[in-house]
Image (cartoon, helix red, strand yellow):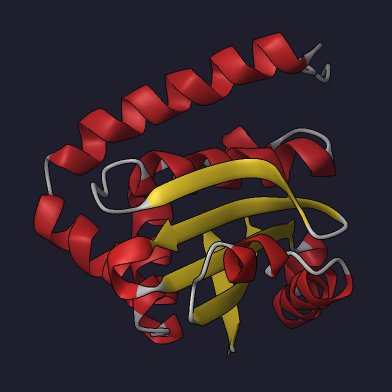
Amino acid sequence: MTELVIPNREINWIFVEQIREWFNEEVSRDSQKLQSFCRAFEENDTAAIEEGFNAYLRKTISIRDTYTRKEMKENFYHGILLGIFGNMDDWDIQSNAESGEGYSDITVEIESRGTGIVIELKYAENAAFDDACREALQQIRDRNYEEVLIDDGMKTIRRYGIACYKKRCRVISEAR
């Protein structure tokens, strides 16, 4: 058994782009379900987000896809969400963008609705979903990730801590 690691940012970018391209093809086959999943983030419907993401993970990935270092596991789920969100025409999506006092995993601005979304993903080691979600939300607060959204005039801010473990996830949110 051996562990493979993505050696640098350039190769990571290629990896993320390939995942995004593959997911763009997959999700475009079921655009209504995709739209509903994404709109659940706007509406702060954590049950629908969790249900939709869990269904998607069960359908599309293998648990072998997560056999890597913890940091890379988070990147895997991060890439999946970016691929799905990339199909939303009215969303401005940023990945690992500087915000506040760090780099938020995913930031979304929906200018037409004045809504901003901050998502922090964590790998829930040993299926400790609630702890990982709380840690993600605490990181958003501690590092002021919503600052850029406020500066850009977003009136409603949604914060999501998403914890993933193999083919399952849990979602906890806070709204401002």
